[in-house]
Amino acid sequence: MNDLIKANAGLLVAGVATFMMMGAGSSLYGPALPAFGRELGLTAAEAGWLVSTHWIGCAAGVAAMYRLGAMITPRMAVGLMALGALLLALGLGVAGTFLGALLFGAGYGCSTVVINPRILRAFGSSGTAMLSLLNATFGIGAILAPLAFVWVGSDPALAFAGVAVFAGLIILGSGAADKAGAATTAQSTGPFRPRFGLLCFAVFGIGLEACLIGLGPTALIAAGEAEDVAAQLLSGFFVAFLSARVLLVFAAHLFAPFTLYLGAMAGAAVMAVLAALVSPGVFFVGMGLSAGLFFPSFYVVATKAMGDDSRVAPTIIAAGLLGGIVSPILLGLVMDQLGKTGFFWIMAAVAGATALAAAIVSRRLPELRR
Image (cartoon, rainbow, N blue to C red; front, side, top):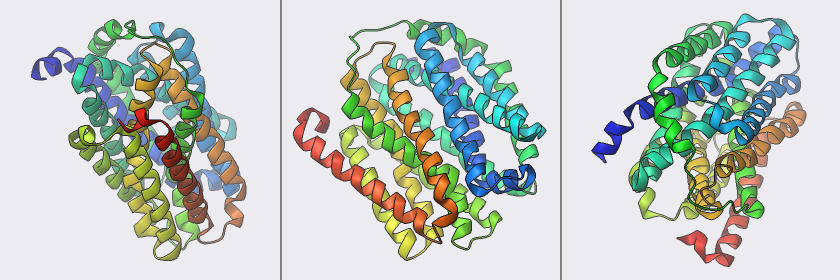
């Protein structure tokens, strides 16, 4: 294991820094939406489209990777995020802001597809644990960014400017990762076996995650929390999110990945009900434990089921992005009419139904329990 880490140190360091930056940038949308709405003259529903625009950009980036994956390097993907963050910081009106979210999302999508499979392959039998560690670092940036947002006076321009600077530093220091990762990109040891029914679980998992991250602070404000408190609660959500992924590094071998996914969905449903009935703030934070498990657990399941073809990673991520795009759009349309706790009841219903479907599928497909 130590030899693998030494051999792939450049790829790992660049991946960790990139995922931290991705977590920072994506977590800023939630607390920044009210400020963007005021500055751009948008309603809460209209401002919510900024989250969906980010995910539309992600889908475009994943589509580009499906066709041009061998040509796109980690530094090129980070460059797109740097440009997007800069546009979000410059405050160039509605068009410029939405273009920034689109470009940041495109780089986010490319980075996810470039880095995840490289790490999984590069570390061999330890790939699942290292993938969990990599995705855990996403939570570090996501924890710190909302706190920094409050520290800079809830100013989206300063916050996204910081993300752009961080991205620039990654570009300067990640040249070795481009070369180290290139060798693993071309490897393919199995056929491409699409499992479209299974991919529906990616749609709902990432859809829930996108709504919690992007619209959760707005829901907390509707429930009576101040904007700065909602931002701090989002940081708490990501502390729980990070904790779940760190634990997964050490416990991933103890449970079947699909069992982890099922348990995470069931846990999210319970936490959402408690958020609606008891305390929105406390149990919103608790939902971070479940959200942290959605992607890494399902990614491993789908990779095993669909093979090692270079098209597998973009296909899995594209399915998740479908949920990430559509869910905030649909929920954003009714956010103004949901009252104090309606958001959490919707989260409970979707998570509960998904957990039930996962339990049924798991009983019918024994291989998912391994």
